[in-house]
Structure formats: structure tokens, C-alpha cells
Length: 142
Length: 423
View 1 (spheres, rainbow over the protein chains, first blue to last red):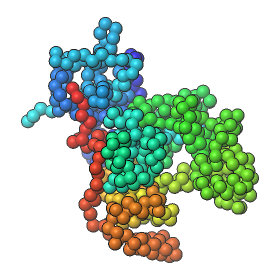
View 2 (cartoon, each protein chain N blue to C red):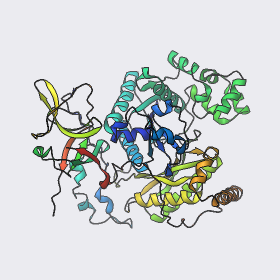
View 3 (cartoon, rainbow over the protein chains, first blue to last red):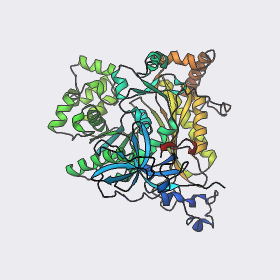
View 4 (cartoon, chains in turn purple, brown):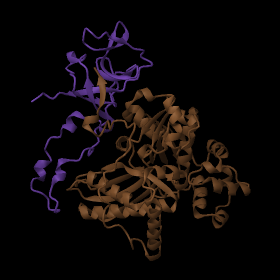
């Protein structure tokens, strides 16, 4: 299964509209333009492959050991090849699950890191990994 | 060489990316208001369900749970289409969307081995990045690329990629086995007329005398013959295929002004609606795009696009213009200087074919009047020049109520509708 090489083509420049675009409507360059260029964009930081990145909402508590909580948003990248140790999203029996891909005694499992959820043994050949979780967005109640 | 990347059963495939349980099952996507079938999975095609089948006829199959019917989710399809384009743009220099699910790419300066590698990697990358299955056809002309794509799609042996060189044994074999009606832009009626001249397959046509056929038929036929020989002469803008209508133009001078953009989009939408009526079709959705000048690296870039459903399948300029304007309002960002704007009409249905559900979805007393109005409009514009009469005011912002019985979530464009994953 998963080859161990990470496939990371260079980030396409201009995939997101730059903040510099807010410069004046009149056609005169805005004096703020040079500074606006430096405003940080979370997309740049979290989304490495815009065409292959999808956001998903977590339901359930089985992945808390991996800091993934109910209601969190996952940043899922399809361009990354899954390796053991990655947190992945995969369809199992018609449901889409988020689990950790692990190897135990030479076999592959989708694991939760929660005693109530037994590891799911998987057939490496037939398993379709939907994507790899790159980050998780957890908002605190304020 | 020119490549054509065509998504397999695009709308159904988009749904399957987020609902893997639909894989391998007969799935259909319905026009707005759930009127009729506008997209089918391979399994649904195999059951004999035709394009344009009214949804109510499928009710029995649906109730028995034999098939799945979904309302069209244009927001999702539009976003997935933009992703496909982004993947292709990473791999090649020039990508020209031909429709929401078909894109031409330029593959220049590659030897045979590199060309095969490139085509194969486009095939793999789109699948991997977006989850959408595609076929890639490559040829020296648009017509041959289209044909190569058709071959890649219909024969599993090609594994989704087919490359046709202008003059090879393989190309000759394939042309001999391609009926004339299957060639891009040639209809069945023309095929029947050509059959009377003893021209039966694409190879016959390729070797026919182009000049004579042009005299007796059309310049389109002559161009097609040249294209089959490997001489490129069909511009991508031509839309002989009648499956979508595209009107776009570059501005004389880049503009960011709302008023200019709005006028351009209105004009394009009106022109597109005229073309639509001319070919006696109805459109289900439209696609609006803006482009900044990508060669001006000193300027901020913005190339937004949006696909929106029309309130019902229509050829009436008014809802088409109003919808296009609303789409423009959603994608336009102040501060960018746009070079080009365009409107594309999608999912075209034959007027005759659709009479039934038309009555079902619009106020039928209005319908004949609308048709008369549109005919008058077109006649005046033809006689006295384009834009003699047009629409100055948008139709009142009617709350378009789509009757979406089974609409999937807009997974990629709405925070409230993200795909739920179980932890």
C-alpha cells in the first residue's frame, strides 16, 4: 500500500486572491498596497494543494486522543499519499470515517485511540483512502 | 498536440466523491425543479434511461429502490469543475474549458514517450486530487482529440488515455471503425446524407474531396475533413456541438468597473439566449466567469467563476439575464482589473422534447406569450442589428424557488454543509 513518499508539487502561485487586490478602486495605487501584501492568509498556511483540499466536519468522540473533537473542521488533502501514522479519511461500509492508519503485526488497521473503539482491520488492496488529514481546526466556545 | 480531458458522467461523479455509497449504482441527476434527467451514471444508461426522461416516469423504479435520483447541485459541480481546471493548469501551460466537464489542453514540444507520460499524469492527477474519473484524448486537432477521447471512454483497453497521431495504422483503424455520426459536430441527419454518397465512416470522410463537399454541404464539413487529416482549423470558440453555448469576449481595455462588467455580462447573456432559441433548445443552468490578465504579473489576479441553476429550463432572455447578473454580483470583487467576461449556457434540452415538463413548471398561460415576445425580439435584432431591443431592467428579484426534492449538500462552498465524517 501506501508508498512512503510524499507527493508535494509546488504550490501554485495566485491560487488565492492576494490581499493586495483591495487597493484603490480609482486606479491610483493605494499607499497601503505594499503593506497589504504582507497580511497573512490562513489558506496559505493550511492549504497546500487548493484543488485537492476539502473541509469536513467531525461527528463523534473516538478521536479525542488525537486532538480531534466533535464539531471540529478537518483540512483533508487528497494529494498526499497515505502512510502509516497518518490520520486519514476513508469510506467504510458506506460511512466516511476519520481514523489513524496504523500497522500492527504486519497488518493494516484504522485505529481510534479510544478503548471503546476496536481497531478496524483493513484489506490494503481494496481500501480506498479518501484523503489525508493535514490539520484540524478547533474553535473554543467563547 | 491538443488534449481533451473529459470527466466521466461529471455530475454523478461529483456526487459520488462525497457519497461513496452511490458507487456502482444507477444514479441520475435531474434538471432544476426535478423536471427531467440531465445526467446519468453508466448503470442508469445501461437500464435504458435516456437523457431528458421526465422524472415522473421513473417514479416506479425510484420507489422500488432500483435507482437514485438527485436534484442538480450546480454549486458543487461548479466548484469541482474549477478544481479540475486548477489541476490541469499545474500540469500544462494552456487550459481552455470547453464546457463544465470538458477542457482542452495544449501539449506542445513533447516526443511520443513524453506525450504519453503527460497525458497519463493528467489522468492520474485529476482523479487523485479531485476524486473525479476522467478520460484523456490526444490528437493533432480538436476533432481528433475529441475522437481519441471517445475511444478512450468506450474501450476499457485504453485505460482512460488514447493518443491519435495524424497518420498511423492505429488512427486509420479507428477512423475506419468510427461512424460519421460519432464525429464531433456532425449530426445524424448529415451522416445519413453522406451515407448516400457512399461515405460511411470517418476514414471515408477523411479521404473525400473537401472542396466538393463544402459546395454541397457546409464549410463546417470541410473543416471537419481537414481536421480529420490532422490540419487544425476549428477554433475552440466554435460551438457546433450544440451541447453548450458560450459567449465571451475580451474587453478592449481591462476594467474593474461594475457598470462595464454588468453591461458585458448582460449582453453576453442576451446573445447566448438568442443562440439558444435559434437552435431550439432550453438551458438548465449557466456559468459566468471573469478573468484578469494572467500575463500581468504586476497586477493582482482573480479568475472567479460560478455555475448557477436557472429557475427552470428556459430560453427566455429575462431569467437568463437576471440569473447571469446575480452570478456576476456574487463573483465580482472590487479592485481587480478584468480582461475578459463570459457566459456559458449548460445542460441544453430540445424544446420539443421538453414541452411536457415545461407546462409543469411555468405558468402555462404565460408561456405562449413569452415565446411570441422572444420571437419578436430576435426578429427585430436580426433585422435592425444586434441590441436594437434588449432588456434594461432585471426581472424583479423573484425568489427562485427550486423544487429540490433530493439535493445533496454544497460540500465545498458552504460552511454549514460540510461533509460529516464519523470519529
